[in-house]
Length: 164
Image (tube, rainbow, N blue to C red):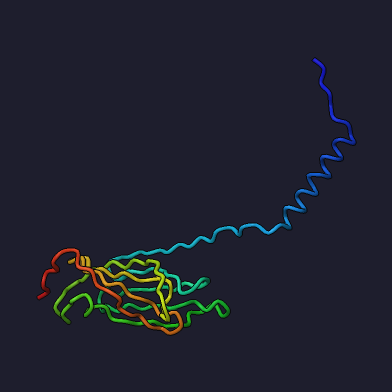
């Protein structure tokens, strides 16, 4: 069996063609790589936290205090590296709590995506707050241009037990 190696000129031509292909291919418009987004949520005995998008390049950090029912949020200023915008809303009334009557309430806080139509100035996200004892869940919209948290709707997966 006789092996035939390519000549030096053939190798030079092949290398030149590969270089031209790389140069031309690098200049052609192509599809931009897909953007990935991730929202996170975590809870302990006293607080639940999550992140949610405020716009295409910014996310907010939201925290629910189980003791007070305060849902607070802030947005990191990308230039200063400090928290700037401050959101605050109390969720207890929306979840049918009676003030001072419930000991050690537990909640779930989960972010979701939403696309609101019209002149709505809400971020492309919602925050779902669930009373872990009853399953009652309220969806909240997040102000994209002002620090507001707005109740959108309530779900009661089973007949919510009346709170004392």
